[in-house]
Amino acid sequence: MAHICRQLIGVGGSCAGWVGLIFATATNDWVRTCDYSMATCLRIDELGGHGLWAECRVSPTLYNCEFLDQTFSLPAYVLVSRALMISACLLGVPAILLVLMSMPCVRLPTNYSTTIKKRRTQAGGILFIIMAVFGTIATVWYPIGSNKDKKLMSFGYSLYAGWVGTGLCLLGGVIILCFQVALITSPSRENSFFYSRRSGTAREAEPPSNHAKSERV
Image (cartoon, rainbow, N blue to C red; front, side, top):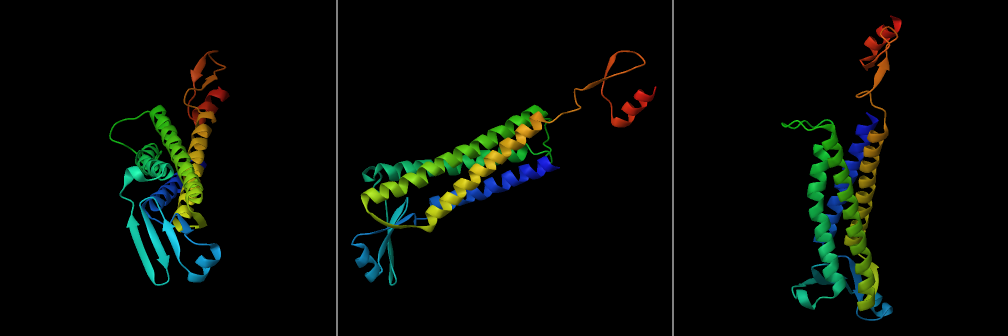
């Protein structure tokens, strides 16, 4: 029961992290920059919001966005961050399906052995960790590149969502893999044998009640 709860926690955390990565990819408030000096920006209360897909002008009376449709003229950090975040979002689909189909409570029409379920769990956990790696590179490189290109003022809510999603995907993937390692290292009665005093030969292990009867003979 503890193993199932651990796997459910890993799946839930990974799914929440995947949603966070999708939210960060779709929104355009990664960093906020200023075209003037710090004091001037604070006085006029006008900042520029930058994301993967648009650049916005944010002020108390104006919110205007310009989409970044000139792909080949964009900086490298924007293009790479786009590719990494899109890849992380797409990898979430097979990762979740693999982990869900390998859960003990799921019964599929075709008979799958325990070994296949273990491999699917391992593959799903590894995919979640790869998603976390992609998200980490994108959410760290983007603000560094923006700071070199423009005057960085603060981080936006999209970047925070990306960091939270990355952390949850990493934590969920590690928990799923630890669950799998615990299953592999835990003792199993499936292929165990016991020694019968009466016949002096090894027999395959039976349920505990039958084993107690054999010991009394």
